[in-house]
Length: 210
Image (cartoon, rainbow, N blue to C red; front, side, top):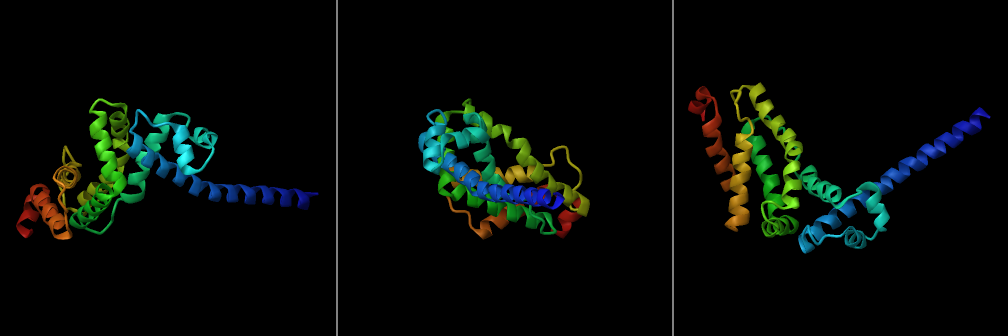
């Protein structure tokens, strides 16, 4: 009796594991379809039914996990940085910022990144889409803080009232050059702007070494 019960429990656990594995590609497909639909139709015109059709799933599959359009779009936008921007750990602030810059460039030069930028412009600064994007800032900043805290622990940086300033300056520069100026930022230019930023935030005794 006990052996039979154990086998049934094992089968249920195995089935649950297989379902989770099968579910992961479905989730990624839905989020990718959401980004494509958002870039194509904009936030106001986006419909969950259209996302489901693009992803090749039933709309109830989408609603079950994301009950509202806002929930779905928030998850889709977060998936971009979750996949691309992983806090680097190169052993130096300069190396971490260069690695961060590469990830930002990859996102902003991608077709989806380019399209979403223009969608945000067309939606306007007070749109619900911008509000959703801003609500993700706290999640994104957690990873960036890890970069700065590691630099402070290594003695590269002094504690600051605005610890995320180096990351913010880098992101703003890259956004302006890539999305506004339509300029290609190569590895040499990325390294140069990181060095310029660091000269302003390094501890005084480190500036002489730089």
